[in-house]
Image 1 (tube, helix red, strand yellow):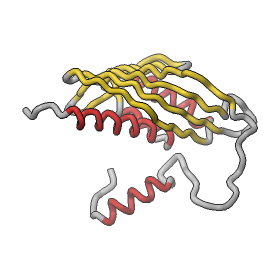
Image 2 (cartoon, rainbow, N blue to C red; image 1 turned 90 degrees about the vertical axis):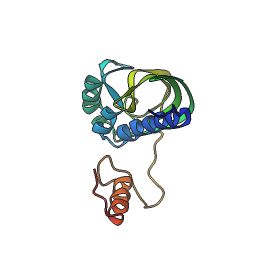
Image 3 (cartoon, rainbow, N blue to C red; image 1 turned 90 degrees about the horizontal axis):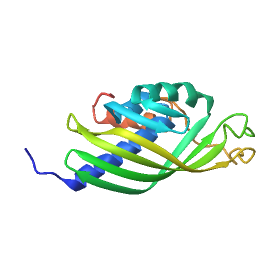
Amino acid sequence: MSAPDPLADRQEIRDRLASYCHGVDRLDLDLVRSVYARDGVDHHTGFSGTADEYVAWLARGLPRLDGTMHILGTHLCELYGDVALSETNGTAVHWGSPPDEPALNFTTGFRYVDRWVREDGSWRIAERFAVREWTRSDAGRRRSAEAGGPTGHRDRRDPWYVQRAAVLGDLGLAED
């Protein structure tokens, strides 16, 4: 068995956090679920339950929005063998139609307080507390782009997936 590598463990946890945010923002709920342990639990504003229940809750709620964007900031991570604790500050922007509806257009400041476990050789969230520190209404503040250009999509038409498929194709690798 190899010696623990704290830098690699911390990086994997950061990568999992980014994968979670990418999954939520792109509506890739299989990716969101993959970040949680088999018996993982999540506590969000308006929700508390198992990871499977949380993903089902997201599947019902996220399509009401036109999009979300999660931005991660300060990250603290403590490692204890095959268990870790992390606190990650972030901002999440939510937008929907109509643009003047406060329930669909808001920004939140949050902290993810996560207990991680190493499961099948990978770090997974055993329990998450998504602590909402503040919320600001963005209703009526959104405006259209000033010119044409790339736009995001919450499916495989998104530039991320298009570029990923091109890179994997160039490398002769099958997309997973």
